[in-house]
Length: 359
Image 1 (cartoon, rainbow, N blue to C red):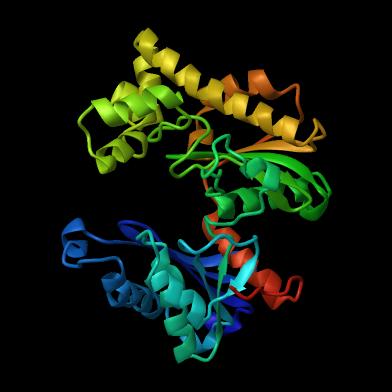
Image 2: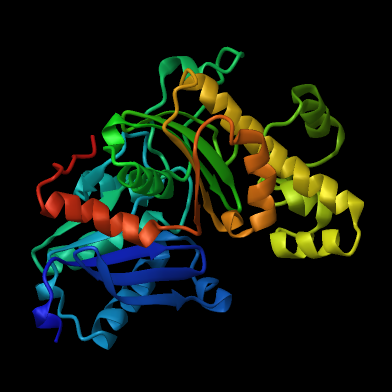
């Protein structure tokens, strides 16, 4: 019986064509579902915001299916969207946050998470939260200097999973996250590598549209003059050039696939070019980890490798042979977003942390 569970938390994680949903009782996930949204259905809407009721209906169907009365929930927590830069932590969803998400500069499905959470929470007189959105900015001022006045390095990365994994590492080595010096590499469609110092990500590459290693879909850092020449001489529009670097860059650009398994199959069949690109991606990840070691003055408690690419033993081996001298390396394949959201809310419910206000 659902009535027998304590600390019930509904977790909402909207993606481009799906909404991941879960019910946690404390640290334990008791229900989970991924509600898929057909492209033809989503095409009925002119904007992400117009999908709000459609996505909320999927959440309500999940609650009905699991026979969870929203009145029994202690709180609702959702993936945060494209807000202005904020420090990490758990934030109360209020009208100011919702207003900015409705009018966000960049449309993204994650913008709907807080809106859905607050709508259902208000109907049931409970709290709603977000945890560690992609706009978490704890970078040192020196890390933001780019080299060209008017252009600043930005903190946009996989904050939710990076901080969740960093907390796992801290727990395993018997330390508090707020007292650790760690490097965390999240490796998926985009790759972000952060230097975590005393609970703050003091330097990290912009994994969305900026710098760092190339990834399955993103070009990462590029030679500046060559990129300028491409912009002016290719005949491509601004949108098309951005599409080349974000979405059609990385493995897609070189090998016409973003699937690392297919790349490994190419290598197994003797494709030396595929092997070069595969090893180059691992090389750039290792190189970025090395730069984070410098940020942390070489005093690192551990390095964590996580994300979907961490399932590839060969990819991990290629990275580890270059970084194992720096610090102990721990591998956490996959992502822990749902767990991270639930635990962020749970720390507030247990008064281990105070929730923050979005300002």
